[in-house]
Length: 61
View 1: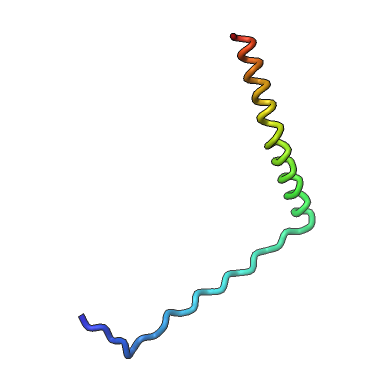
View 2 (view 1 turned 90 degrees about the vertical axis):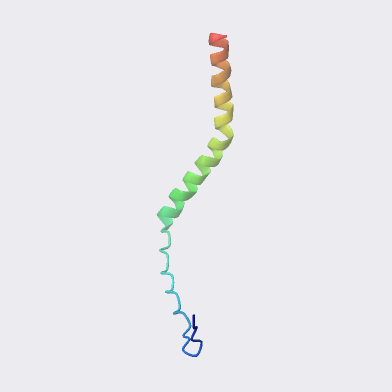
């Protein structure tokens, strides 16, 4: 096969990424509350789950 390198054109530039919209202060506050709730549940849920499991073991065991 013949490859013509004299007629080479570089590939076109990729289109620029559009600017992402910023969060409003109300959205930022809501996101902060959601993250805080998830962090609290991260530590509370295993304790509650262990309590439920131990209660079921005592009930049926």
